[in-house]
Image 1 (cartoon, rainbow, N blue to C red):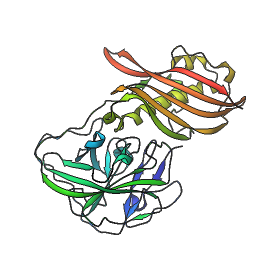
Image 2 (tube, rainbow, N blue to C red):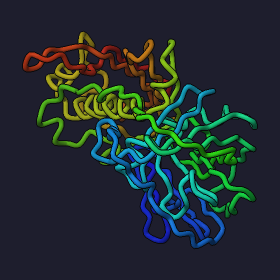
Image 3 (cartoon, rainbow, N blue to C red):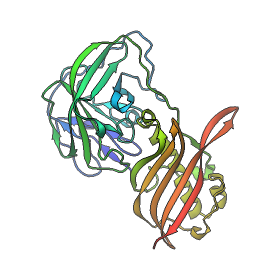
Image 4 (cartoon, one colour):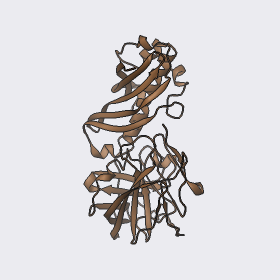
Length: 359
C-alpha cells in the first residue's frame, strides 16, 4: 500500500513508501490525503539561513541545496536538512516545514523525515538527550529533548512553550505502510553558537540496479503501478546504524520490489525467460504458471541484511492468493557486483523463492 497524502494549504508531501509533512494553523483531514500534523496558528516571518561563501556540499544524489545538518550523537545519526516536505525533499533528506522558523531562530520549528530513514530510531530518544542542528559555516544550535508523544493525524499540536524544534515521523517507526499515528519528539534550544567549519553528510551511494528485460520493465515494477500492502522493515546482521538512518535502505527496498513485481509478472504471463533474467539459480515456479495474484492476505515484511555499510540481501515475505490457493511467499534478492563499461556496479537478483501453500 502506498502512502500518498496531501497537506492542506497546498503543501504536498509524498514518497514511495510513506509521506511526512505538516502545516501550521489547520487541523489535518482524514482518509488517504492527510498531512502529518498541525501547529497552532502563528504567522511567522520565515527566512532561509543566509549562505556564506564557503564550500558547503550539496545533498548526496540530489540537486537540492544542503541548508542544514541534523546530528543526534546518541543515535549515531547525521542527516542533511533542506526546505520543504515534497517528494523530492523527503526522498533524500530531512524536510523543514516552510511554515515554521528554522531551529536556529525564535519560535517552534519542525523537521520531518521518514520513519525508515533518518528518523528510524527516533523513539529511542529520551529526555535530556542532545540534538545538534548545524548551518554549515554559520551556526550550531544545541537542543535538548524534553519529551515525546504519539498522536493521531487529527490532533492539533500547539507551539512549544519555549524556543525549540519538533521532530516528527510516522509511528511505529519501522512501518512501511500508511499509519494514522505520528511520533513527536519535542526539543528545546539550549544555545546557538558560531560554527565556522564546513560539514558534510554521509553518502552511501545509490541503490543496486536490476537487470530487467525491457518488455518486463514496461509493465511497471514499482508501488505506483502495483498493489502490495506493506508491513514493516526489519534488519539482520550488524549494519551501520548511521547508514540505516538514511534513505539508503528505502532506496534499496525500491530496487528489491522491482524484482518482486517482475517475478509476479513473469509468472502471470508464463515468461520463464524473464524469470531467468532476474534470478540466479532459482527454479521457475511451475505450480503457479499463468496465475495472477488474486488477493493479499498478509502485509509484506522486508528484512534488510548485511554488515557495516554493505547491504548483502533483502528478504520480502507476504501472504498471497493465487488461483490454486493461498501461499506464504518469501523471496530473497542478493547483491552482486558486475562490471559495466569498465566500472563495477551493484545489481540485485532473485536468489531464493519459497512457496508454502497454506490454503
